[in-house]
Length: 400
Image 1: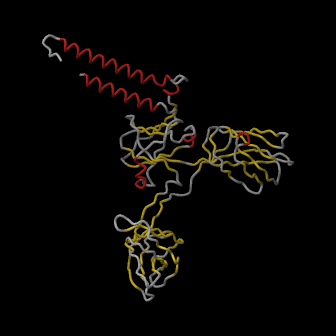
Image 2: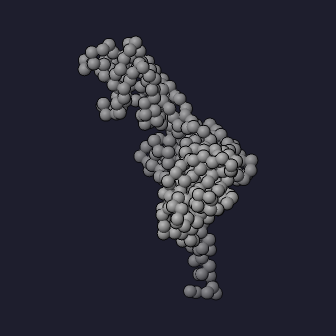
Image 3: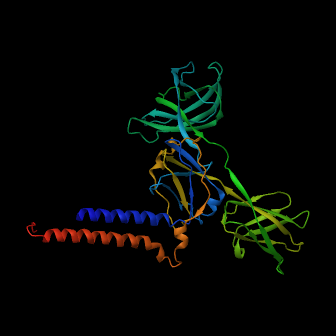
């Protein structure tokens, strides 16, 4: 009975800790049920990104039993995945020029890099690389490329990579120079190719208001207001007041932010990393008429979660914990297995975490569930202890 009571107490502690972990997040959003057991792509809306309180680590995914679910966070730029494609070696022969020629077949449309597996050697050689559409006419691609010894591999071979101009030849010839010397032994060849879904995608979000005033120091000071603390990577400023101008503008408080050149000759997005509902700026006018900032906008990079979901389970996103650290999931080691065309699950409406909102500002109320679980567990433990003591005190019972 004592073991049962102790196990029940530990179970309550685990449940309380799980509930306490979830309620550290200010917001949550439910996902529609998964149709099958597979990888899914979960787009993070701009409002979810804005409400992560400056820390993208503060996102977690839980199933309907409260279990944390691993994921990979990606954007289009970083979701490019590399895969190695081997190229068949068609021949290794000594040609009339008395050089060793290794001919390989390009099975892809465009090649920018060759990876060669070479038998361990302690000698250096140089090679020329040529290309051909039909193995009859050959054209030089790159010459006098050094192939150094490299780091000797434990399995008797090592890999070396050669960068070449982008080519589409169906056949590639690797010819060794130094005709009086033995060539290195190329065991296999191939190239890495990247599955890149496209250019980086952004959301463009405009300001809701601009306030500004001109100072006696020949500067225009102002504040740009946004509806949320959007995590912008770049900002665009639209100004009026002169047909031709070229002024310095500082984006940030107390003249401490980055300074850029604002010009009528070009419309530019300035690389400004900011996360605030109000962004300060000042424009250096010198002796020119002041400029008026009429509109501003920011670029917010789109991001997604990739995760393995099970059919029949429901899942929810929790986010908005500025103190959460970077999660450490094994899934990051299997990134190449995640398909780029994984089906999407759109998060539902955003809900406030009611438990967190109802907690006292001092923070002690966040522990009430833990204390309640401890109290219940202690009561259960005392109950089983009392029962065990009573059994031991019965006439004829075995004494310890």
